[in-house]
Image (tube, rainbow, N blue to C red; front, side, top):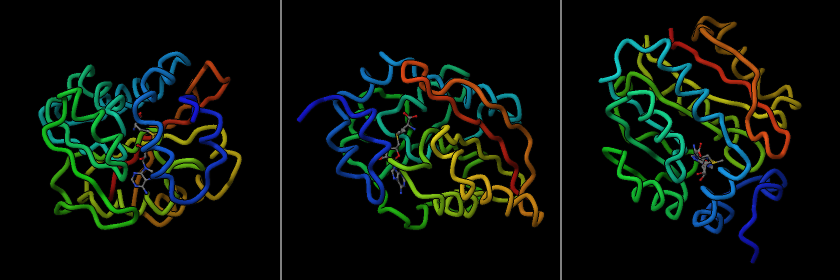
Length: 202
Ligand SMILES: C[S@@+](CC[C@H](N)C(=O)[O-])C[C@H]1O[C@@H](n2cnc3c(N)ncnc32)[C@H](O)[C@@H]1O
């Protein structure tokens, strides 16, 4: 099997665990070759709204830890990670930046009490080739009032109105407030952009 997965990822609907388990070893190299920049954009946006860098952050869909690394470089000190791919988690473990890493069953409740984390990140996680939009409910259920989430939707996700409609359903019903939204580069090497959002749970 080829060790290049970037293009085929966006053609993989449904459960993507096999894709990410196979991709884990070459993921960092392929993403950095193509200039994956959304983790840095998300981490900077979260920092701008965070009450403190010493408050715990959960990196949901942490993968091999590129998102955790960006958080660490922004100064976040306490970062835990969860993911559904054991091989991606192994890559995250090797980076030695997470306090705790947990393997999750897709769609299962998060293994912490709501409010245990000041923020939950969901960086490059929701969209075709990764996790379904229902993951946003999992993330919001894992936050207490005042908790923040930073997430991204790439241009493929933005073509399907269902993704942003989910965020609108939270902001429109007073369950969340949109603090930040910005379009910018996602993976410049393949000409892909993304929106980064920061929301506060109300
Ligand atoms: C494109 S990678 C992003 C990883 C990391 N956040 C980054 O920025 O490099 C998407 C990740 O989402 C994970 N994932 C896919 N479906 C998921 C689900 N239902 N729940 C949690 N994570 C999921 C995959 O295993 C993979 O590690």
